[in-house]
Length: 170
Image (cartoon, rainbow, N blue to C red; front, side):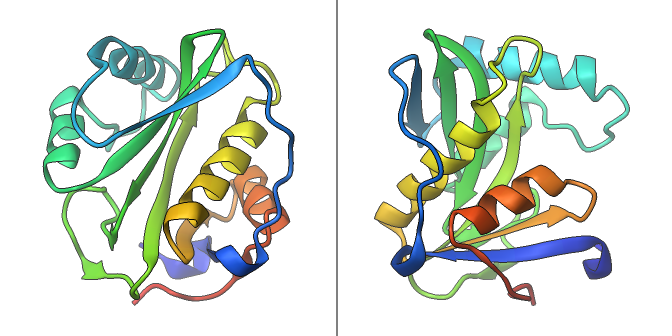
């Protein structure tokens, strides 16, 4: 990974700022084991259709393996239809599978988000980030993430929630 092409961000509980109010039409489920296969497949099928040239796209087996090593996912729903996900783990693993190193105590690594834009309302990404960052910071002291520099929207969302750019990767 070329660290010059990414933005590293840390969000801390002490400075978290929510950026959007809740909406009863959105709900979220935190999964720590492989469940809701149909919903996971809905997201995977969208990834395969929209990002068909992504060589490292997750597979169903990859998703199952992620859960086996302690990685978790938040599924986002709109009107009870799955529209996105947010992955996290208590250690740094770029692929959410192969642990590269431990994070500082009280830290969590988050990212690898995806929204099915063809069915999700326009505010879905903002809501996913606001909800998930807030949820992470009720469970952990700090949230570590990175985004490719071209992916400006999530960088802005993490910063708007109180995050700071900081080179945390080893």
